Length: 587
Image (cartoon, rainbow, N blue to C red; front, side):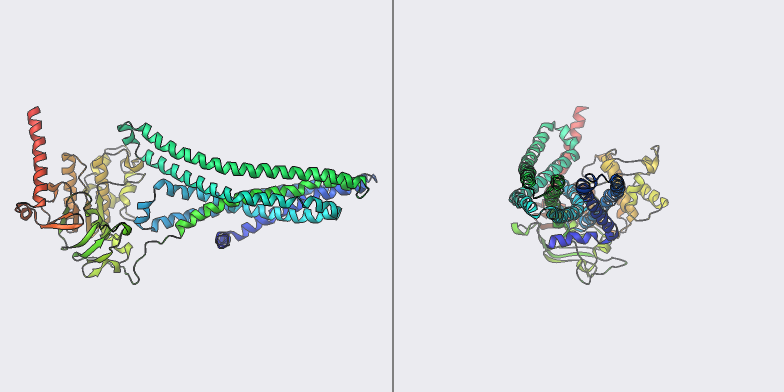
């Protein structure tokens, strides 16, 4: 009942249109009863008594009623669908807004394709219920009540005989309904899995082709596809049982009506006109019952989708601590004071274990160490993508938990190794760094990021479309575009998360020049794989297994005989020299 009440609340903004839809749906049902009434009147009076003028008159009135019914049918189809579409748009908007506010942990545990299934397929099913459900319920309820009264008015005993068959329909429906609902849920989950597999495969199509793994991807897809077929098989099996038995019972209605009505006519209990009317009108009783069974099936589909919709809507969103404030300027030292954190508390495995360090305002601190040591997690905690389980992170003297997320993130710029670009133009992607940025600011940011000349070499310049996720650009061009974004944002704090690790030496040098310019006057945290890029850092922190095991300047750390940093640096130095020697030997 709670879910139904919650579902109905979405009609509130469209009550006038919904009322018109319901009025027209009811009008359709009312006009539908004219035919059996006029039929009975003609058979019992007008035709036997040869009242030609009245036959023409009532026939004309019936035709006029059907014209009105046509207009009402148009209103039901148009305005009813618009109510459903508007509800669908509202729910999809609410769901999208919710997704934007959910914490990172939600996206860590849910595949994009499955999320897409909620926002497309599930909301579509809800829309169908929102539109057709109330109309069908109003029409079938009125038709059933009227048919009960009307057929009883012809002959109560005969009507009761017919009505006695109806409970069988509802018993069958309720027996099958539970299994149908469960199979519908399985089918919905299977479809979400297929969407997830397709999204993953399409996103990684170049890797698939590079490794000739199309067969493997097909196997993965086919496994989900077979699961979907099996789930649908169960759903259609229960649906087929329900439909077949329902049609069989309605056929029994006709047989019972024919035989019992014939016996009543034979014994003189009813007239031939009443008998004929009863035969014609029995469908007026059975049709709404079939529609009601169909409505229950649609209700199951829609409410399953609504339950999945509510699962996301009811999730807790990212929220600021009570009393958190906006700050015009966020300046000062960044300090991590005994910070501990784990992504999965149940596993009791800490990614960061009692981390403490300070980044002086305007200085650059580099984080180095093996993969999975916790370097990127430190950056995520600073932006409040996650929250520390223990300890405090401060900017100046302010605990970042006392700063609103919007304010904090406005003052932090990030350049990552895995650059995400949106479908659109160069200008649109650069402008993502600042709302309402003008053309001059966009051009200035592009110049500073060393990508202006390349953009202007293109026929459409800044209006050139970059393709989905910047597919038409090289790695270096993507990186410079993301740097231009941050130049435009102009933050006080900068995070460089392996920003050059996947680039060749020539491209790295070009981007490093842009990054050095970007770092000027900003407090910077650099996560680095290539140690040659962080020699001039104010301090280098070696992070391993969630702990800071070494700290100091480049020169200081190299003086440690058995230091981890020294071993990492020498290892990279040997690899670089090996590459150079190899080139010399080949030449």
